[in-house]
Length: 294
Ligand SMILES: Nc1ncnc2c1ncn2[C@@H]1O[C@H](COP(=O)(O)OP(=O)(O)O)[C@@H](O)[C@H]1O
Ligand SMILES: [Mg+2]
Image (cartoon, rainbow, N blue to C red; front, side, top):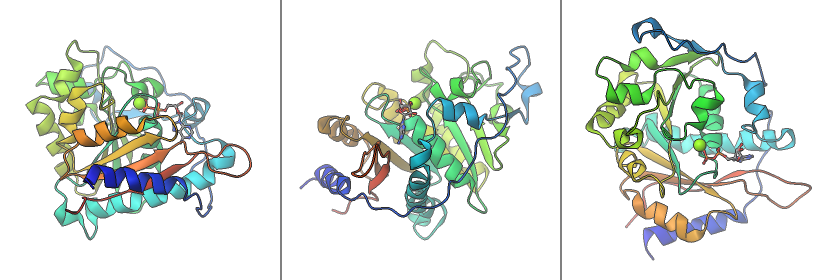
């Protein structure tokens, strides 16, 4: 059996494994909408920029689980983040180059990359001793950037295309302690191509090494629709592949996994899994993890 088949097998197993513990919700909605961006400011003026993340708005847009599922999902993210953190800083970290850079990927759109990025980032930001940087890598369809009303801000495309714009100029602090955001940046005619550039490799390396206690999460474009996403998958230490339960065709999962470098650490999350029980249950069921053995 190939490693891909083994992964998909594990994935199938996980669909019947719905039992998880329940714990308290991690965060409550806070605050108001961030003030609108100021496009006239130069990169230097933006240094140490700040944005207010409006949790109520994220909730309205469906980026948290429905209230009845929230505690369950919070527990699931605790389980999902443990091996990711271990590969970044823990026992297995030495074996994983750039293990603190995690790409949240999926075959297509709408499978839950952005949802998982946000929930995982908030869960990780709750950890002692680590900081989290979320990067909107979906530069053609920057849903996260739009959601946070950061469309006008300089961001990743600017760092990749303009040598005068440095990372420090465009990384934004937020009202969530220990959580920072790097928006997608301004529209660029070759936005996706920029992701496959040498500069992206340098930026990824810098993001990984600048702060030793930092987890970097890439909210990626769809693997099967954006060939540059595969290039980025080769740059990061870990890939978290989101599969939408009952929606992502198994062939698409196989194709997406086949595009990934098998030497990378790959985890699979079965998202939007509706378990048995009363009413709809949304889950992110962590299914497979780690480099496949032989
Ligand atoms: N586990 C989940 N529970 C509830 N809603 C979810 C879940 N995952 C995704 N969604 C919702 O599904 C939609 C698509 O998810 P999104 O993260 O935007 O997908 P992608 O980034 O892969 O295009 C969004 O409205 C999101 O809120
Ligand atoms: Mg998205």
